[in-house]
Length: 337
Image (cartoon, rainbow, N blue to C red; front, side, top):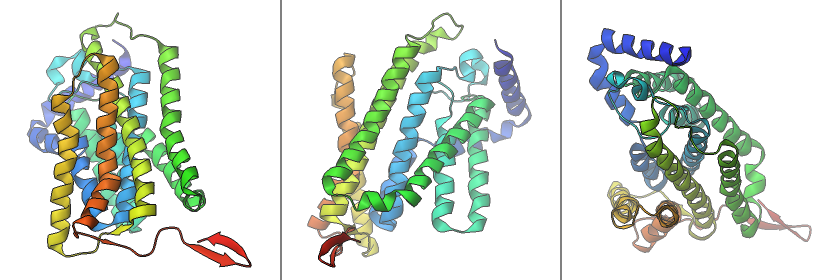
């Protein structure tokens, strides 16, 4: 065992032995980093609270998740409880570094600070990220360096997204529909090409390790997660663009209407995401992966585009008369503003 892994295991054992009273609290904290939590919260923001913030949050989450899935499969590193089952207070099937819980927190919580522009929120965000990292280490599902890697990658993803917002968003929004659709199609395509190149260079997983029993499931999980990530990124990208050009709903409305929106929207989301999973086959792989892609793509399109359209049709929401891109004529030429 490498010194890095041994040191990490020692740190986990020390935490668990000296602070056993934290078991339940940190297990709860860890739940706030799961995909299911964000599946419940992000659509709520987008449909009912703040449309623009929810849209950015959803796309940033999809971008971070896909980046994490690709890197996990590239590094193929173990989790602590794979090396010492006694430290495993929770279980996961995917590879270790980088920690997706910490990466998601590092990408989304500072973005919340950026959006709110309140200095005190920095302290809350930093504390929440550190607490998430502590929970994953304490539960024995990540080494300290897994959490550090997640923190670094999350900040890089956030930095790249903020650069796009500041320097390229306005230009992108004022492009014609076809050009914008090509861009959102190109993003997951580039990820797919990078992932394919990584798989080609790294080859099959090495089974000559003490934790080889976990590898087959981790390999399948990695492929599933990348497939899901590509589908969500594509679905969110297309859905948000179509909503902005054809639907442009507004989140205003009574509390009753907003609650009805959310309950209807999340029920259909779960029906697509989990309902189809119960009836679609998981094998063989050549059939399961395309079906998984379609399932996640449909769920993402529903959240981003079809749900707002249904809300307006059912009069649970109103459509704004002002599209996101407006055309004006100046000096005989058409300008977008």
